[in-house]
Length: 171
Picture 1 (cartoon, rainbow, N blue to C red):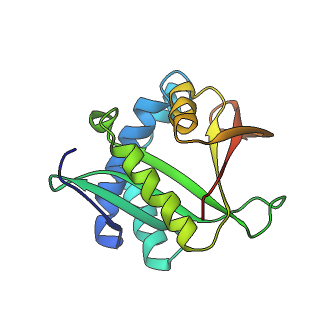
Picture 2 (tube, rainbow, N blue to C red):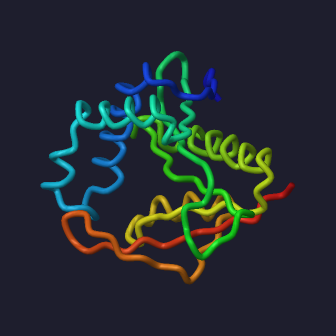
Picture 3 (cartoon, rainbow, N blue to C red):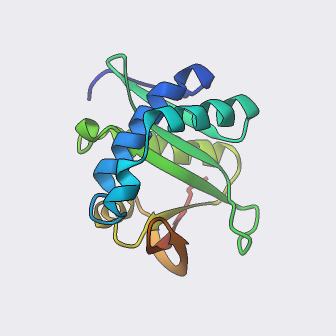
């Protein structure tokens, strides 16, 4: 694998995170989320979001740098679902620049993230994935996540369904 390091993001990384988030959404959700929504995602708006979230400590985001390029990021933390107890941590989001897909980088970042949840004492990891995001679901299934019955509806230009996946963590 390429030279890759994982580190915690800081507000100075906001523009790189915004670029990854914008490009990742536009590639991963093409044909799932309406084009008018994807076309209106901007690096400038996302950069402001990340800068505020990181400055205020709302997000715990780690990024992966591959040969000095910020190629992806993962946000994690406590589980935000009311039906689960404090033994569940959550991967809030994982995004890579599309040119880094299928190179083992997402797996490396997810392995790091699940280890971080284990280090915090969580017994399970959860994440939410769009029901129509077959590429994403297949990736998570390969990492040992299992689909469970919890589904929620969200509105992003149209009504979409998200499915919760769960993985038991080996402590």
